[in-house]
Length: 335
Image (cartoon, rainbow, N blue to C red; front, side, top):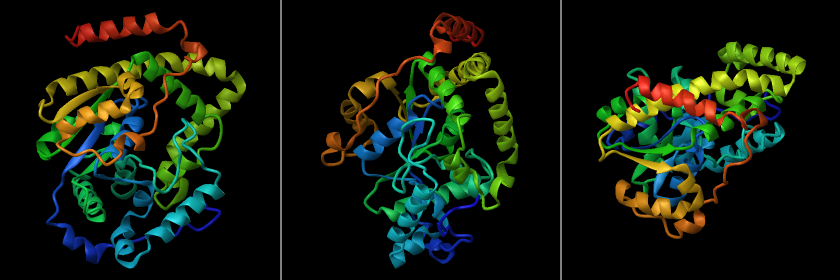
């Protein structure tokens, strides 16, 4: 990807000599789990603001291979300013698919780091060494933190394997009305087709520009062309059943995975309750996590946003979606 200003991203592991000192630190992750577009970002942000947890910020993602050196040499502010200047030069203010702001100190999913440096969005035997190094590095950057807060919806179905591998891990699930998840997914797809996605391209860039995500980019270009010919309304109606099947499949997997999780390691938060009173939900989570709330936690947490209007393509779709979900639950023996 071509940048209008040089962000100075590291091209090699500048932390190599300093990483050996991390071996004694524990791998103690707290995972935010849920479907894509189910409110995981808001939950992630709320927990990050409420508890003494280290997080993967955008600065830490893009400069991962220089974090320990920056901590030692005082280079963090320089690179944060570089990153924010790059966002500004590219006119990146939010994620475009929603109103979540984009800045060096905002949090992001660890799947992008795994893909960037290990080739996969998901935590597996192959990517586990990088994941474990990341957890230890994030703890080293914030010695007062007691664990690392992480989010990656791609790993929601793998929670049982992750829990077995990391017994100290804790999992906070978030549930949301299926029609609201579908609505958010549809709006996100349409937003992706609305114009250039420079922020997403930055996240996907592995140093070789579009070569590392050329397939997805070509599909995006094709769909942009189809949208220009058919219009947004037709695209929305064509996407609706495809996204509904995806939501149904992911919801079944979500419920099966959560049911199999040990009660001592997993808890579920309702999105509507979180939006209505995020401070109360964080207070309830304190016991489960075994962590103290930060001073003035209630004032630090951002206010949630109630569900907006349904897209016109979904206003009469509730019954159809409910019927699809009932059939899927019956087939899975969960009705």
